Length: 102
Image 1 (tube, rainbow, N blue to C red):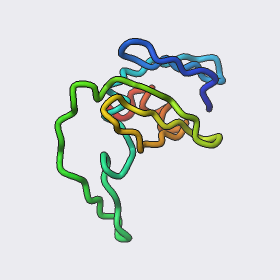
Image 2 (cartoon, one colour):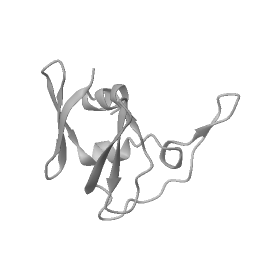
Image 3 (cartoon, one colour):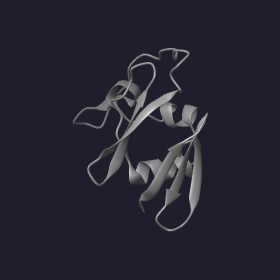
């Protein structure tokens, strides 16, 4: 399943999927679900995850400044605090939108 339209509003991202359904994801939830290594950690060859220390979010951490398509498989948000390394695959984005990660 792929999004056909993604529109950020004040505090959420509206997503229209190719099956006609719609999802609304809070920008805070989207940011806190960032899949990059500096947010979620990295796994070694044995499957052990090494997570970075918890950091407080800046006041503008949940303000979306840009959504960039990544190939045909995902999107990379950029945030007002300068963070922008997370790539959200369509499947991962759908799971976040469905509340599967909360």
